[in-house]
Image 1: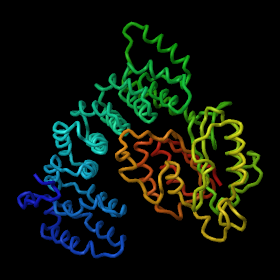
Image 2 (image 1 turned 90 degrees about the vertical axis):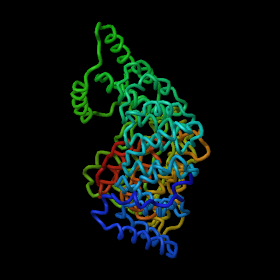
Image 3 (image 1 turned 180 degrees about the vertical axis):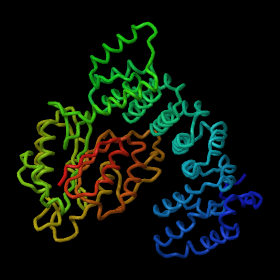
Image 4 (image 1 turned 45 degrees about the horizontal axis):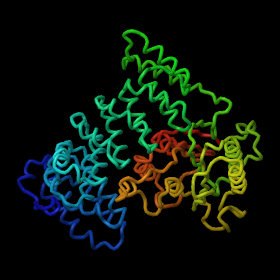
Amino acid sequence: MKPFLLLPLSLALLSGSLLSQVMPREQLIDAVREFKRFFKKYPKPAQRVEAVMSLESIDCPEAVHALTPLLRHKEPDIQKAAKLVLSGYKAPETYKAVLEGLPELTDREMRAQMFDVISRAGQVGLKSTMKQIWDASQESLTVAEKYYMARAYGALGAELYEDIIGTLTEDRAYQVRLAALDTARTSKLKGLGPKLLGLLDDPVWQVQAAAIKCVGRLRTMEAVVPLIAFLEKEGRLKKDAANALFEITARDFGTDHAAWEKQWKFLTSIKGFRLPTEVELEKARKTRAKADKNYKLKKGDKAFAGIPTNSTRVIFIIDVSASMDDLVVDRQKFRAGNYPSFRKIDIVKTELLRTINGLNQHTHFNILAFAKKVKGWKRWLTPGTINYKASAISFVKRMQPLGVAKKGMFGATGDDSGKTNTHAALMRAFDLDPAKGVSSTAITGGKKSVRKALKLDTIYFLTDGRPTVGKFVDTEDILKEVGKINEVRGIVIHTISIGEFEASFMRRLAENNGGVFVNLGG
């Protein structure tokens, strides 16, 4: 059988389409015909993107047939537009021929992309098709195919496919293990709980973090003892383990290892002990949420701008655009901070210097200063030894806003160097080229199926304004790009704003990525 992209479309398949009640079939076909006629003739990529988007409401098999090849187009923006349009088609008839052809499709990268597209379109028929592919060729599936298969089951529901998800949690590629764990968690595959305990010791920290969240959500009683053991370790996973312990037991002793050990020993000694019910857990959650609102930093807590962290692998991203030279408006709020001036940059530098001084040699960190361009203090995460802290302090003291009447960090001003390239700063933290965006290869690792993940686990991102320059300026696009890569990186992003700033973007950036948003005011 030929790959589905080359199959002729069946007229019989289209006769019962629900879409014909909305738009005449002849009109749907005509729209696709005109697209195919003119698409390659447009000289500018923006025109081609617009042409692709014109098929947004043309929910029919012909549109799928025309758009699917564009998922491999050389222009990333055209790929992105095609995926967006294809993911919006909801009629089951639209994807029937595609689903029938998937098992025989020889282009494995295309098949992986179709798993993603069709699942985003909510086509539940994909689940049985993937099962057919799994049974026929499990051993030869690529990393990308297995990754997007796991994600697709997560989006569509994996309740009847626990065996597949269980096998994928054991895959050599960490990205696949990670995706399978997320699906086990979201689909509440409780039967997998005890089998996931070994992943708490996975060599990749992102998999460990996903496993911790998974056994917490599944409320796996057997996970309590190894989770308590995490509390003796340094790093971000300590807090994750404490959260999972709370989800399982409905008890809250924070990251206090001794208290948890003592309490669990006592509880398991009680005859007939059982875990709390979901109703009891929900009541405990509400009580805990109230306590969290009243949390105060304790002496010795590591924090930046009032946001505490247990992380030992962190990057601070600091805005040095022109507007950081402005004075804060609400000066009374900052008087108690003992800052050298009311300039936003001086306030931020003071907070960062205090944080750096409090780091120890077990914490590895880096600093990125950004405006139109991004400048890093180091090319790697660096231990908080006395010498490196002295170097970081020197770097921070030299930071000045760009694009103003004085010379900034990147050389001469008087040009557009003081603009705000938010996308470039975030991609640099992820060790990605901002010009290329987030490709499927960046997510699944391409041929490097067991590629190690970055050790970075926490970002503090501070800015005073909206993005004004870069590959992506629209905040929705930036959120989507960060979300795509963070599916496999699992990096917590805390966000801090200062000055008169519309906070919606920063709040969502934090909330979407497990972080905290703080508005310092201005």
